[in-house]
Length: 266
Image (cartoon, rainbow, N blue to C red; front, side):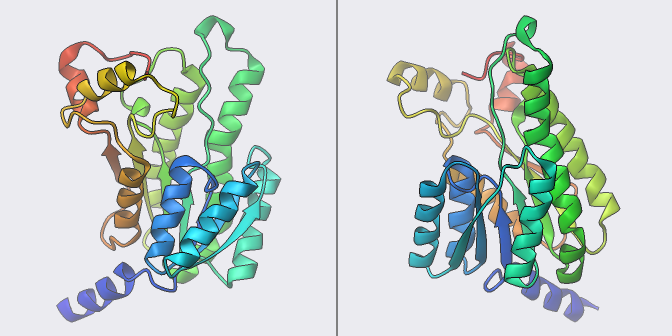
């Protein structure tokens, strides 16, 4: 029995030659995730919507690191386009081993200004499209005994003010992850990574960066690579499903004792 488990572990933890689709991979956290997976020998489908230049750069970085990559365009706010993206990747790659749903919108909108349009565009991209791609990919992932990783957010646990549609979408995505972990077991594992304050805007003032770092017990801002490392772990963890790894330097824990729950994230 133990020998069989060890053989399964060896198969699952070696990512070389396996096929991944990363949505929102032309910029920021998605780009770091795609690059990290490619560096471990995966064949990566780099999804983008408007960031074609960034997607091409990610593909080049993956090739330099020894992996292989191709760019795929789709507007994931359109669920038919989201499903079509999966179909294109599965046909091109001959299957799929890992789906990382990273694409998301992060729109600040005061509560009194939340209208149907603001609500609908956030829910469409942050919740409906991850479900659409996961649902479409289920058969390919079952065939490969693969996995799904959703990129959620610490706001699903500690809500932010002024981001109501975003917070609700990420909270629902967290629940979707847990429900799918049951629906797709035992063939497919489903997990999530929840970033906190990572990769702040490049034009943010130094004083603001210091204030954000001071809120975290580890006293620094997180990087996109910190998130990517957690995704890589989950991609190769054969006995982990239905779990969310929080990557926030301890800020969520600190929020419970400082009265900062509900603050604007910045």
